[in-house]
Image (tube, rainbow, N blue to C red; front, side, top):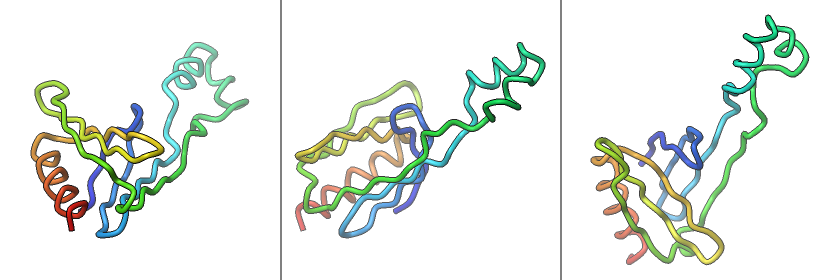
Length: 111
């Protein structure tokens, strides 16, 4: 299964494999830098660039997942929280994707 999600307020590409969950966050455009660029006539963007540095990827082995919970987050989204001994990661997805994700993760955890 693969989908887009918000993780810590940032868009990420998420993939669920039988043995792991992986996500990658690309460098995005910083709203603060765009605002500063507009206010300074573009000079600050020339000096610092437009993209933020919060890119990266992470992976959780399926054998480390200890739980999956869901919580509605507004009219259209649900946060699916995947818990492991070292962390809890919230994936913000549509209600339909949340149901699919929860079912898939529960079946992989119990397998």
